[in-house]
Image (tube, rainbow, N blue to C red; front, side):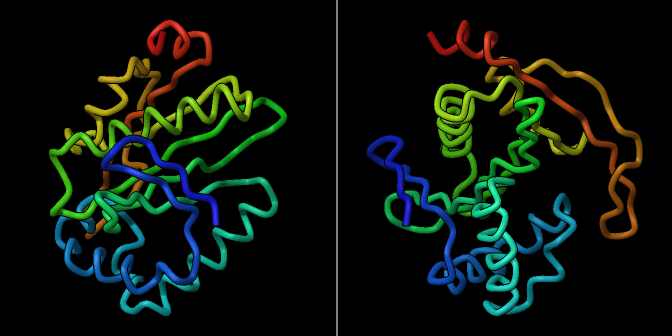
Length: 183
């Protein structure tokens, strides 16, 4: 399957069934951290649950609706990044991501998002990319802020996780804005 080396430490690999065990182990080891921000964490209780999600994600890839990758850090599965909600009629998409607890604070996600932005704008010819992050998830919000995204708004009480409503902050970046930042 498709693998793209980003730098000497990081690669993105199109998610496939062979990754299910490692992805499950990473989710399980990072469950407490992830379930603060991700609605799906409690639904993943086995590698077979990861298989079900992967099946849906591969179908989205074939239908050109999304691309889901595992992030490899020094050859180990470190997290997940997706270009999803691809809308070809207005040439837009959303980037979603998560990292295992042991891999945060190393700049991994910023580098992975930079690659995804280059791919979205320069290979897929998209016009706009969004990132949504919970208002309280400061680490996740730093990534679009660091990369030149514009905070476009919020959706109040947009997700219910662990009995608590989370307000989502919506960031957007246009292709010409990324060209200025990435040059």
